[in-house]
Length: 87
Image (cartoon, rainbow, N blue to C red; front, side, top):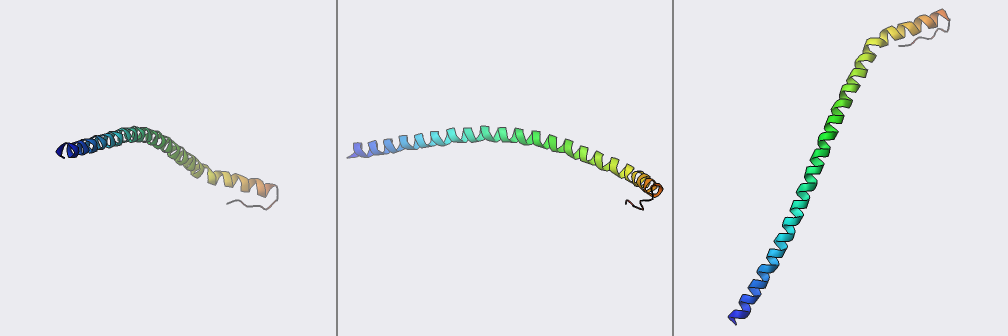
């Protein structure tokens, strides 16, 4: 009877080992995918930073030229008697 029990335990141990190996393989795959995702996030962060810098540049240019630009439009408008005013 003891041999049968040992055989059952041995089979169970092999099954557990197989399951653990499968889990380990999947974990390795998940880690590799996670590294790829982290790399892509780094690229996205750099692109986002560049876009933020560009948006800030455009906003600062707009802030610097909007008053002279509107003054020019208002002057042209008053000369042409359209009585349109831009603000």
